[in-house]
Image 1 (tube, rainbow, N blue to C red):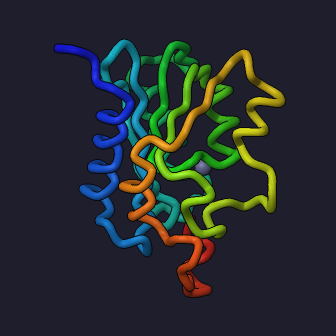
Image 2 (cartoon, protein in one colour; image 1 turned 180 degrees about the horizontal axis):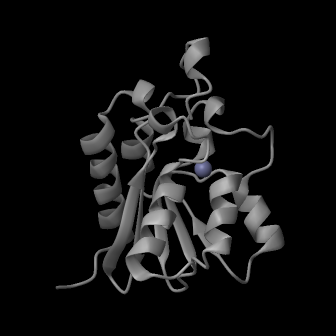
Length: 165
Ligand SMILES: [Zn+2]
């Protein structure tokens, strides 16, 4: 079987998000998949609300699952696919995990500002400035399909949901 394209992996991540969390933005359907040599090593979905754990982002859940699956804390040569541009925490976690490539769907311009904790620092700039040799980052893969799962920039989000990222 031919290896899947970035678009095909992203479609799987989006389908995983919807299968586990539904398509309502109120449930924060964010999913991440870690792939090596054309095979899925691990996956995760956002569990911050369910676990009362601010670090339980989809990417961190996938990194934890990948570490358990392969018995190592670093997994160079892997690609992490995420339906939403990773935050600073997840970008740093990816660096610590030795992930080689991040590909994301919806970018910060596609979604409500509640999804990003910073005012103007993009993880793209962060990685390019500080870690360009270790990690490459690209986005916009199926961005429209992915962005549909989240509150959009023009949406009015209830106050109580704004911490639910
Ligand atoms: Zn994150």
